[in-house]
Image (cartoon, rainbow, N blue to C red; front, top):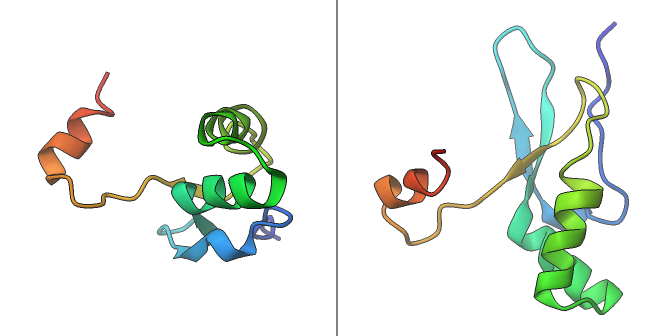
Length: 88
């Protein structure tokens, strides 16, 4: 039996879909910008506090194969520039 798709408590409004991978379990996909907006509005954090909280307490956690996907949206930036930001 495969691990269930996991969700993050209180962040349902940031779910943007289900990620599928060949031969692997489906995963819930969250938009990180929406997660940060929720933290700002719901918890009264600044944007920087919410981003740091997300990085260390939400997005940085591994909870098995059902761990959600945390998506960084492309936005209006050209694809090449967007990808360049993530290349080490």
